[in-house]
Length: 296
Image (cartoon, rainbow, N blue to C red; front, side, top):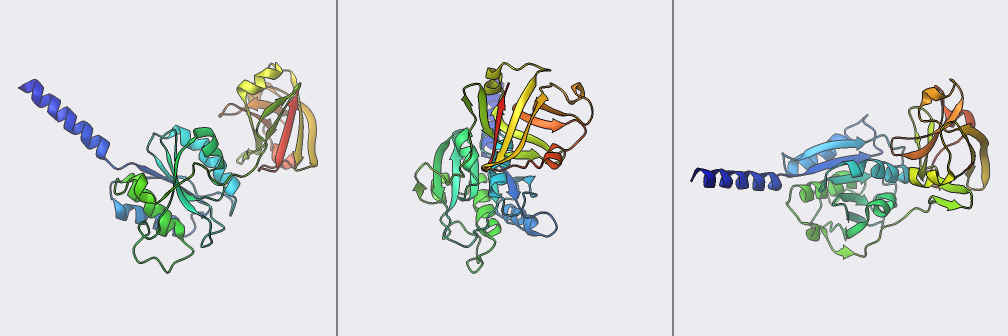
């Protein structure tokens, strides 16, 4: 009898854990100088007070959809299955762009405007389902007259309802084809003895240059620590930088003030100046229009 009671308590505890509301992670270009982010979280808490609410970032440069796409890809894989992300970088708010919930094959959910923000996670995590948000059913009560704060009135509200189990994915709205709006960019490819890729983002605190060239592809050049990497960078068709720098495992392997190439925390090829700012010195920035070639 004691064993039966223990088993029942364990089962009930497990069911309770499974029934607990999930996590919602917020990303915006709002900044934190006003109450916009707090309002979104307040709406979510109004749906269910036990939701776990976190911030990815609210410092996306204003209207920069591409950077929003990158930050989602950079962080989402480290969160548990079932996490719901709200991404609101929405220069087209109030227009005809579609509001969606994307479920990836990894089991994560992404809520926001289908304006290119889901370009990278759709590719890296895979699309399982896409649903258009039915704003008749999934919109904060008495907010129909508001056209400029969908982050609060539609996205935070829908994400919270989904995370809390108030609605299922099917109840978000009609299912759409398994596709999202995508921003074109240079994918990493091996061409002869060179690799062509994109500079998706900067390590903004230090001015380091992060590429989308993964370690496994870079290894095909057979470059070892101490050997030079020839680097050429274009913005669209304009040549911005051309030079060579050693490949190093750590910043301390090159003299202070000297350029270097290395693998960043995502194990992608990157460029830096030891104790300096590569971006500022050489005028190299990031975005879908930036292309890089590396060779031995």
